Length: 331
Image 1: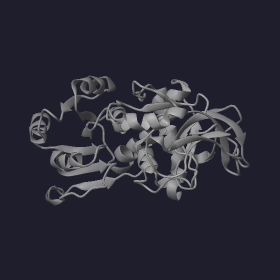
Image 2 (image 1 turned 90 degrees about the vertical axis):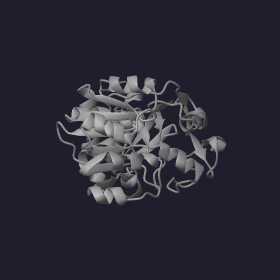
Image 3 (image 1 turned 120 degrees about the horizontal axis):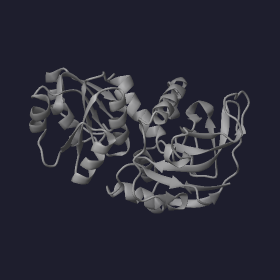
Image 4 (image 1 turned 180 degrees about the vertical axis):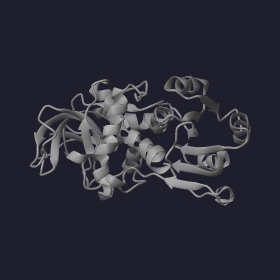
């Protein structure tokens, strides 16, 4: 088969097309003929060498996958050749990724693609949805009617988090950086939209919560945004963050008796921990998509697998709004 590989960490030009032996589905696995994938920040970190969590070199990156089952391993009963599937299933240590003609995956890491979206659209959702699900449902346990603040509402995780929180009955407030992003956040269902460049944290907390703060804050940005989250949270508030590779003064967190939940969604792939729960999370994604409560916000520019380096540059430029779609158009 053909694949886009990296032979060592590097810049955007680290990717090259290569011939790789066809993988074979073993027990508990299926093989997918890949149709599409998407770019996530973790892949940028692996490509650059900032995170040493990628597959063995020559490494095939990318966790999100959409495609068609073309081989079924021993013991698999619920997938058949020809099934359209999506999942978050590889691209990390021990698991080659989706930037290839074929990808072998643990069957627990995929699900049947929903009918309501095209296969390519559905394929950008697994990692960001399960990240938002872990943060908002499993960790902070949002409740109907609670005010939830989502930092970065039009990012890959943030745009799904808005929709998920609304589906769970929360009152959703979100921060954005421009009028264009504010309009998109409202379309996604946000009840209140805050331009953090124009309004201080203390001001919007006073305006929107009467100074009480938010019982739940989901930080999808990190850095200063996490400090802002401590300030925006209510007494005994619950904060979840997906970007905590930084140092912070925890005095305010201590003084407010806050809880901080760090979400690192790569752990099931890296360690096998809690992998038995992945099918239920994927089933929740499919159900919400079919109910029309979750849909992807796709970035304006799309790329083929051959152009994955340019896709990385696009994400790092900050110009992309939503998820970047990668399509298999020949490698």
